[in-house]
Image (cartoon, rainbow, N blue to C red):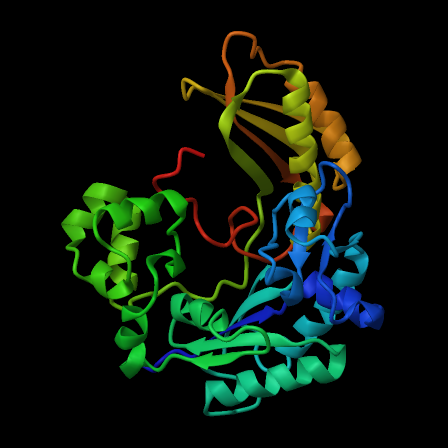
Length: 365
């Protein structure tokens, strides 16, 4: 069988980079995209801001404390979509086997490509150059024989990076990965692996499939394969996104309605950004509530209008929260999801929520 050639392209700090492109005076300063309000969250941070510990999904208020000279720019999603279309047009110059994960990220299968190029690394290098020429932005690329390694490789030398993981060097590369870099390993699973004495890919490969499945269920088989460089997932070009959502588990349970409304306001800001990033519109909002005793409920509301902005999300979330009896049961988790996609907005992409990583198998979220 012919060895697959997979490229993962990830635009560098995409939203902020577009803002810096349109306003060069921002360059060299710590900048984030988000709403500069008491409940705003960081959508994207540039690399200057990241040196202060600022990152996506961080509350803007916390980001200001970490970086007092932080510049906050309101998002311009229509502009980000415009640039994303330019990038995807470049992808199609090389292959039509494209799996978009969001506006700024995609897998490409270039095993057979339109340019007849033999080396995937040459294709990745040329695409990076074309993206810079056309958009003025930089992208990082990972090249390997499978999606797992291509994804990890694209993060390896950011920004403007290019990293290749050859099949014969895959195990050595995996040996030095932290378990947190593995597809599907979230915070809870990482902590559990650490308690088992597993911190690296090499140590993960030392566990049997029986040990892993006993601890992590079906994801145990995934971890077992990845630790051995096995990932047969294809680049999926035809799909229908079902929903986009976000949720938070709180260290301290919520007991007051005003606390929950404040948290929903933060989630609504984040969800608005995720909807735009994934070019998704729906007509149903789902509120998820998990109580301190781990019992969980969901309430949903279907609206005739399209749900895509914070104002609509928050208005519906408030209505749904009024249906929840939390007087005797503190709340440990809140989540909101937009589903029931508008038919004319159905597009191509993987069948999953916003995050391309699957839920942590040990998370209670």
